[in-house]
Image: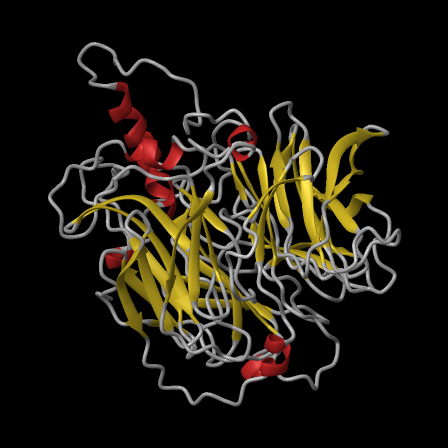
Length: 546
């Protein structure tokens, strides 16, 4: 069994080595949609997964579990949120947490492949009749607290052993104790208050995750957060799902909420499609004051499937289908700056990444252009790619970004549209490189993957691109029912792709038996997780010694 180092509520274990749990793997646990606050979907290092290992036999289905959850129209399971190293009253655990559309939360022991606990929220709000765009029920991903700094660690491909940094001595100065103690105290203090203490493992205040000053031996409570269909914000112990305090009011009932993220003592989410009469907006809940702030676009709705992205300075970025990228102050959501391009409008959530000394942002429009922006000078685009689809159905949802071992920065997008030359009939993963052009960063063509049916946003693990052909039948006919759409869909397929060429390295074949809607990939501890419409969570990876 994998050994961990995070102390849970009700334990007397000494909290040692948590710096390695959070920082040693190249970026910490998968805690929200896209893995980090920037929505990059990039796992920088992994002990077993690499291009070389995927070219050999061994990577396969580890386990699958079907849970009891009634889908709401097409919505079923959310993307898994992970806690790879945990010591609690039940011993050592590695967890995956998944939300179910019928206001359910499921905790899986990922080592043993079993359900550890499950919880149902008894929402008091009346449930309206659902539709394809407004399915009702629990719609937002679960989340765990995190920092909004760029995750550390080595670029993809350097991982090997799963450590993100170079080895160094653990011997401190005379009389000062071990180096690790000073490092843990410094990281506990953080650079922005208790919400990011310990690498983002604490939430904010009181029983929602306070750290006792800089005491590295103080017990840390590990939290899991959820937004139920009645708009209430729930804080649960990861060990058993119990809520020590009543849920907080956050959103109006029956909203289509997406992109829940917890950073620096605040919770953020977006609402889309006007579901439940709730306007498209960005919402922030200050966990200390319990105050709720809202920002609404001047026109159009919120674009993308991953919600808002947060830059390393805490600025919140959101895209709209009216063609704007708004930069908002943390917690207050006051407008700081805006980029405007007009029609056809954005279709993806923003992704934020480092390029040399700049913090860049990319987002996709419905015709397949990728806009590249400098967050320090937001009003003018650095680069725009050519139109990908004249049919204006690119529908990327979310982008991914990573940097390879030689320092090349990549931006990847799922295209739910054919390629003009006929090589792609349904959709594909499209890759661009970031390179200097005329003295400024620009996007240059990279590769286009094999054909996929409505692909999900890809994930990059230690230099390997993982992509999912969701199998979901897409149509612009608003009269089609969820049952008809499900009947016309095909089983999902997970692919591993060469990061330089997009060529297939591995495929799950016929292992998965249902399609995917509204969920996505996550990875931790050398295992990948994917939930399907029939309520099954799949885990793929290499065999683990127990």
